[in-house]
Amino acid sequence: MLKQLALVLLLCGVALAGQSYDGYKIYDVQARNSFEKQLLLRLSQNDAYDFFDLPRSLDASSRVMVKPEDQEGFEILLQKHNVDFVVTDENLGESLRLTHEDNQKQRLMNLRSTGRSISFTAFHRHAEINAYLDELAAAYPSRVKVEVAGKSYEKRDIKTITISNGDGKTGKKVIFLDAGIHAREWIAHAGALYVIHQLVENFAANSDLLKDFDWVILPVVNPDGYEYTHTTTRLWRKTRKPISSSCYGTDANRNFDFHWGEVGASSYSCSDTFKGETAFSEPETQILRDLLLDLTGRGKFYLTLHSYGNYLLYPWGYTSALPSTWRDIDEVAQAGAAAIKSATGTKYTVGSSTNVLYAAAGGSDDYAFGVANFPVSITMELPAGGTGFNPSASQIQGFVSETWLGIQAMAKLVVQKY
Image 1 (cartoon, helix red, strand yellow):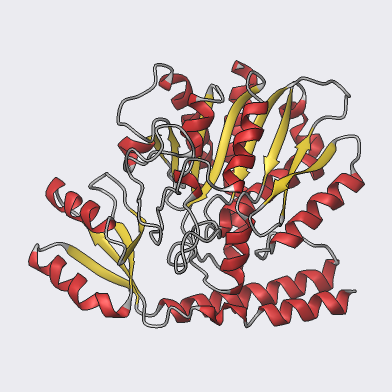
Image 2 (cartoon, rainbow, N blue to C red):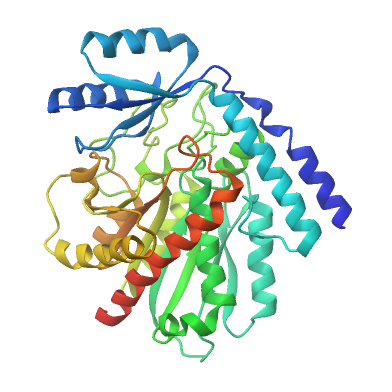
């Protein structure tokens, strides 16, 4: 069995050649005033440019990926307006190959040394993640329940893990955490797995978080897209349901039916921010919707993990206005940011999605707060690795353990207040 798994991993090692990204460049662009920020915002609406990060603050640079055929025009435009930029990666394809090869090596080493499906020294495939959940359910039957919440468009099992303290009490309040809405954000999936590991396998140290609360965790919301990033196109973001003969997938974080399509989402089906043909057009968002609605009343904290940018964001995403209870959510988010800053020095920016970044309607965090009535709803954007979405295998442990410190601090405050 071990040899068979090792062979699969070796075969997967060459799969990333589907799209090479050879010659793609990564630019960091520093806007010095509101005009230049508005210029970048307009450019971000052009599908020729893939903006990895577009903060509103003038203190922070934006990062964008540009295809070889668009680079000359992009640089000329920035030079015309005297906008400062630097090329941070001359050949993204080579960078992705190096991190991919490193990850494959680490997966093989983990499998050979431990025989386990999961480690925090490599990124893992969807089947390996599901296998890990099943391992935990078998090993800790009184505290762990794994269920298939539904199937993706390509019929992959979307599994949740419910973690309790094993006291048998039902109807407890719930902290709900998900990850992997956007396929290419691999560190988010790893972050969710580390939370699971801490709550289950390090239960004694974290039992206070499970006394009056159960945790429900969905570590891979978008398995079709996630697998596609492993086999074909590393920076694929969307789901994989065909929209037309040439365009696939919907941005699942623009597909929720709360101010759907009003702002910050595209109607063009090939766009990375395509909102979907209708709200909840995707089976994956329907599954997440149903899970959240089933927890209305019990659900107290919704946390969705993304990357990247070191942000703790809360509603609203569709408007710069703030909900009446924003101070309560801000207090929780600030607790997470403070815990991380104190432990590692890493700084997280806290605020509403629109005021820190940009307006984007149809997100899961707005839906959890505005429709499913979770009183605390936060999006956590984990740090960048490599050029953004490609942390090295050696960075994973540091990122996920740091993330856990913030989540632990936020959860403790929620447990105390709710």
